[in-house]
Length: 263
Image 1: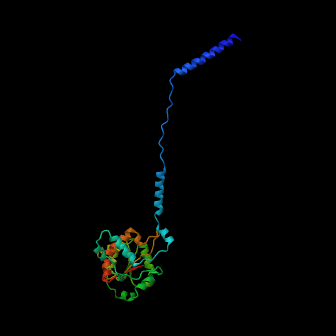
Image 2: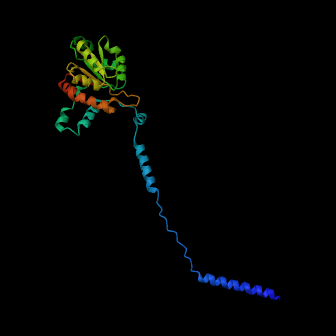
Image 3: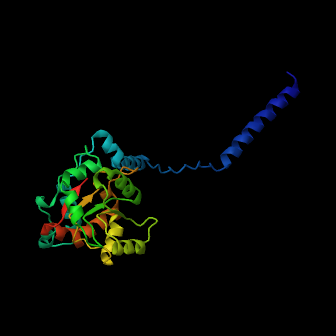
């Protein structure tokens, strides 16, 4: 063997032993363990979302209800129940009893087959006589309540076949000042008033309209607007109608001078 080869082998072995000594002298480095991260389950959020969705689904629209079942015509019991629910929380049993109306206070209800004129002809067979005998100013023979000025105009047009030559006054707020209506009622004589409960109530409170001569009060009960709401589905109209009934009409009905009709 070549002596240079032996020297190379010895150097290589010396290098290996030196490397081992270095590694033994270095302290062992501990590997850091990763802290376990908390894991949150998303199930509760999903449950909440599903619960909210379920609640949203439960809310039924009027249109959905009407699609499933045909609309039922209003009957006197519907008005009685409405009054009981409205006054039930704030009135005593005796006060609620005084607001109840006997069946004899009501006219036959519209069964949804009538036009407005044909309904009025059915419930007021002696209209011609009543119209001739009416001479008082600031008063009416018939009062028709509905939900809006536009609906009032529709009803006035649709009663042409019934009203004949009797005088009709518009009792709503849109485009008509209350002073104009007060002057008309004071100077002229009218047989029928058609309008909204808010304006009628205001005229009664200002002594511009007296309801003592009224024989018939008709509520436009079954008609629905573009949002499919009846007049009693609109909170403001409902409140004003009930206020008017409580302050004036119910007493007149109980005395037998006024009859209520649901068209």
